[in-house]
Length: 284
Image 1 (cartoon, rainbow, N blue to C red):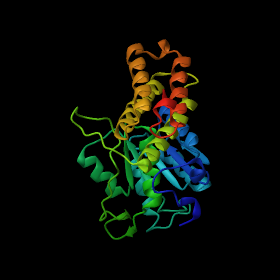
Image 2 (cartoon, rainbow, N blue to C red):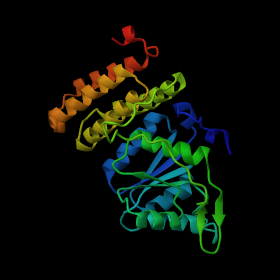
Image 3 (cartoon, rainbow, N blue to C red):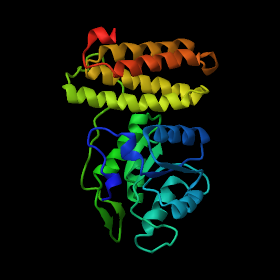
Image 4 (tube, helix red, strand yellow):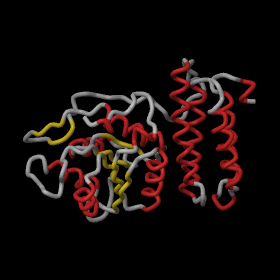
């Protein structure tokens, strides 16, 4: 494994990602832009895009990416067939597929067991379920590069080994009022703040013009920020994130949002992330 793939176990930094080349494949331009903005804000060195599987194969040949994010449903060649064509090159060499083992993360709104099963048989490494957050994208990068599965080539299956089950820590919104608030040590708090900081940087790049997908993304990211801050008892960050969620809820429409208000909340959260742990006076 090369040095550029040795990512830290707890969080990702721009320095860790600067050597990576990532290909984003999706026929929806808004999704491509959102994923690209997140990856660039996180520090990914090269982000390449394609609107379908056929064009992705051209990029694959010329750019040789370290990782692929692909949509499931696309015209001409969908994400399933793109994955199969890449994995097939491990059996029948294809000069246009330089690395049949390249990690592939499927970005999909499909949640059925049948869809997941078909994607895994095609050779997909991991999944990101729409609607996604920056943390979901970055966690999959960290997972496939720091904990790679052995690559299997057999008569019935080609792709990452399925015998080892890996679970990511849940990072979604709190589902019930009785969900426990976990007490975290300074290391856990630092990790949560690192994640919030990366997402905040991504959001800053995206709000030059607030459209509906961007507003939805801001809303989801702030909901996750509330959850993480609550887990580590980072009250000030939680309150600031809640305030922005309430503002977006109250306004509702992108054209009614004041970018300066959103930027003001982001600046406040960024300042809070720079204070010492549990320094109530500085946070106030």
